[in-house]
Amino acid sequence: MDSDFGVPRELSELQKKRAQYHPELPPCLQGITVRVEFGDSTTCADPSSTNVIGRAFPHTFGQPLAHFLRATAKVPDAQIITEHPPMRVGVLFCGRQSPGGHNVVWGLYKAIKIRNPDSVLLGFVGGTEGLFTQKTREITDEVLATYKNQGGYDLLGRTVDQIRTTEQVNAAMTACNDLKLDGLVIIGGVTSNSDAAQLAETFAEAKCPTKVVGVPVTLNGDLKNQFVETNVGFDTVCRVNSQLISNVCIDAQSAEKYYYFIRLMGRKVSHVALECALQSHPNMLILGEEVALSKLTIFDITKQICDAVQARAEKEKYHGVILIPEGLVESIPELYALLQEIHGLHNQGILTDKISSRLSPWASALFEFLPPFIRKQLLLHPESDDSAQLSQIETEKLLAQLVEKEMNRRMEEGIYKGKKFNAICHFFGYQARGSVPSKFDCDYAYVLGHICYHILAAGLNGYMATATNLKHPVNKWRCGAAPLTAMMTVKRYSRGPGAVPVGKPAIHPSTVDLKGKVYELLRQKAPSFLMDDLYRNPGPLQFEGPGADAKTYTLAVEDQDYMGRMKKLQEYLDKVKSIVKPGCSQEVVKAALSSMASVTEVLSVMTTPSFGGHQPL
Image (cartoon, rainbow, N blue to C red; front, side, top):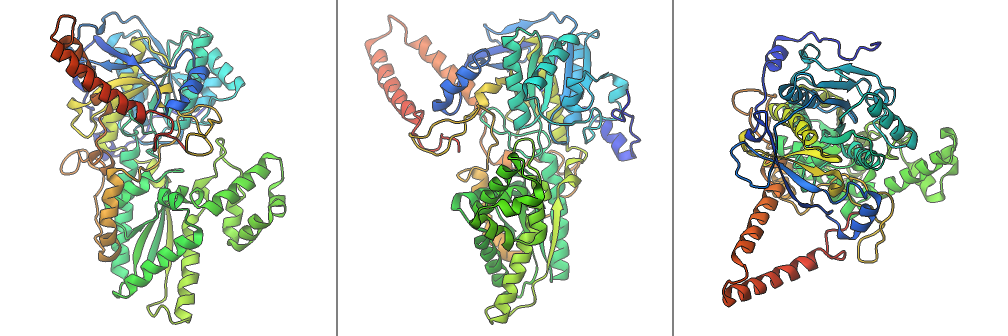
């Protein structure tokens, strides 16, 4: 092998101790036998997209949910798998680095070897490009030794992060056939798992025996839906960032003369920024989803911050900390429109240094207004998914400059009579995504690795490994698998019954729910955060002691046990069937009909395409 991937690490004493930590498994994953219960066929959250997705994925849409059961479970129709012939499985990292990814590989390897020592796990070196060129390394205990419970993706590495074009899909299929793989496990986020769904469908159509399994691993926290409560890496990134933010908060309070503008990773959504705000209590959070909903301009946001600075100055506070999600630039209407126009010119093959002269009049005026450093960053070529290079666009510096300019104007006109405004800017991203994973992420990733084997043992294709009930201890987690197609939606141009689906079905990023409990908690606390300096330091990552088992607010506050509710609903339906049988009393039949008619009417209204809140943007 001619790369540095998989080279044994030199571990510090702390890393060695963490490498010795062995994650716990829920009871349903313990033992040799695999027990699986299948639920009803699945659909998708948006009823109006059902036909579109069904036509695009005829072989993998509508597959049932799978629940993995503990040995003592008494489920008469469960499938019990006791024979485990040798299996060949491939695994690759497809997406940005996220703490805990290595533990998925470890969990998968352990599950495979426990069932049959002759099974083989092959890691694709260099991510998707390694898959296309069949560049592999066999995963062994020796290879894994210094990567257990460690951060990064350097066990195997990652590259272009996509399996999308016809050539790429064909190369992937050829690799799976040539290597005689029974399964292919793809570790990544929304884009990677959308590609995995398409790959599974293509394999099924071509009768390729390789089964495709996805794993939700992304620091952005945006691969959330009714089946996925959180993503591997999100817990770690939020904890590491929150400690950094808290350190800056204490620095600001000590010097009493700086405003810190901190931009956080998270791509287009603000989950990381929201969680970090609840953990560290900065003075302000500019939430991208709020900005998009209210259609706030860059000047509106500047005014909000300036008004806050002035209000704090009236209390003789001349310091503060402001969090900014990296996706904010795409949430501000005029900047997003400018980016779309620039990307359109890129797609036409216009040279970068010629783009500014080809902009429409309004876009040109906005472009010229912006500082030179932002102009240069907006002109960068878009990512592979046509989004802006958000990590390279320094929105925090733009806001800091605009706020400083406005505060100087207010001072000159006598509107503001406090001290001169001073700003310091930071971008916290790479410092966190390469971190040693938290205890939660170590456990979660390891469990998902084991679930991947259970999915393959059950012969399932086009599924994502899922664990729910995650705010509780590991021994209470529910393990299962959900079809990737059940997580898909079709983007549309507008809301309402007249909206027409456009584009390909995909798993789209989940935005912050502005009606959810986590957002409501932030809104309750925001006024005191702004004025009272209630800075909080969650401390460093811990594997033992106080705080080791703490969960994110995003998990602890929301009531997300969708899979548990589905099982409970099935129990009620089965109970109704057992009570209402031919020969039961007339009164029982009447009561059942009345109740069922009422429930059916309510559910029919809720699942119509025009029902508010179910249309994806």
